[in-house]
Length: 230
Image (cartoon, rainbow, N blue to C red):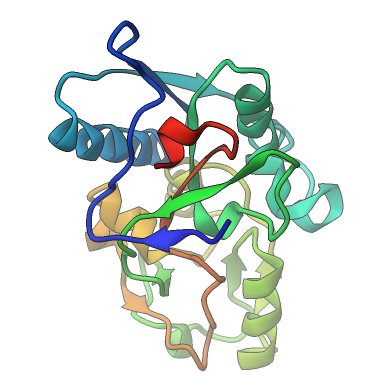
């Protein structure tokens, strides 16, 4: 089923008059919880009678922090546990960062809504340098994304590009501790967490073409759940 992009989240709950609870599967990171709360608030705007429960969970991608994502499964590492909760009936919808969602979905699951997109660009973050171009040769730049690493090496082959895992707060803490001269993060995540001031310069598409879906939040559910899909 094709996902539809809407100005608001127009979804009906799985509930009936006798059952008014909708369960949202989400990762436990601060950014993921922001996204889940955003979806919850939008739903309550349209259906204030709902009781909405968040079902936070840890994904394999949240646990395997010592290995580059490309070597342990890539994007799917951040959604599989949430999808399993849908398939087992432990949640009614799952909220994802669209840049983490693989192209193929498990049988019986699919996207029903893509929320309005935030800034899709990558952001250059550094305590000492104003832009990627100002980094001295040999500077250490951190990012977990193979896409970003390849583009950075093409733009600045004189830099040291090192893997950087963890949530936004963890990555910023490592930067502030001096482990990196700069890091690259999604601008949308920083803005949603009210950390926009940490952005020194948004990267142009020529410097770093953003991931497909970056900045957008998607909602996944069981395709057989007609009430939720409607």
